[in-house]
Length: 90
Image 1 (cartoon, rainbow, N blue to C red):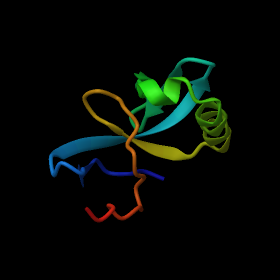
Image 2 (cartoon, one colour):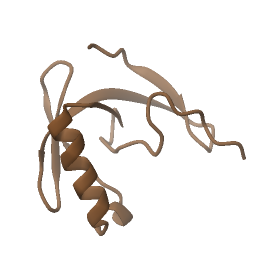
Image 3 (cartoon, rainbow, N blue to C red):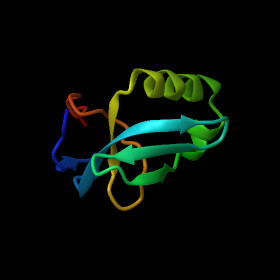
Image 4 (cartoon, rainbow, N blue to C red):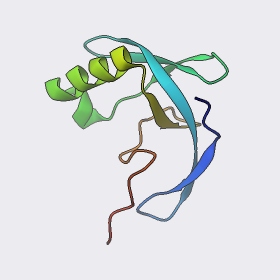
């Protein structure tokens, strides 16, 4: 399924353009993904995620299931909230 690029409102109300990716390789400390145009990119986990064993296991499961994830277009970071989550109230 193709996802269009979208604008996501973050907690600080800044607009961030996102792209859809599928994880293709998840190791103990890094991830690579392919975009809708089959470009291979490196995903940059947060400092907290780097130390979280559950995070890495979840990413491996997501890669195996071939689930599309939103990442920031410029920095290739995972979003805190997925495509369908409502933004939390402040």
